[in-house]
Length: 156
Image: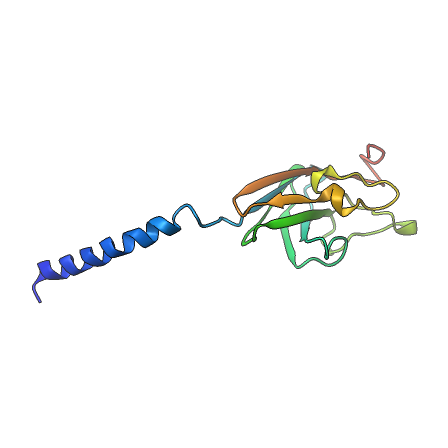
């Protein structure tokens, strides 16, 4: 086969594929959600995010992510997300044991927070207070950790 005819064949394949690429370009979603967590009070351990649907809220959520803690703000990125309605449950796992440590009567010893900065009163917030819409495109949400014991507690 002549080298020019090989390039011509490849060129025809590329031209044929261009309409398909044009249809899919711009339609694909990134599926990325960045959760910027403020008020991280140390640089040890990690910040943990659970992303929940309404049925999973305040339970075990299958969509999770972690990032090494940074004093002040830490961002946890979740990928491969489908569009939908979600709520984020977040905690600062300062000692790295992969759970929220609790004091007497179940009060969290480590920082906790929810999307929309939903308030934590005598109980966790309701779904309606923490829910947000995710359209499948790259997005950043922000929230602030709350502490009930130790430095920074009392500014709930």
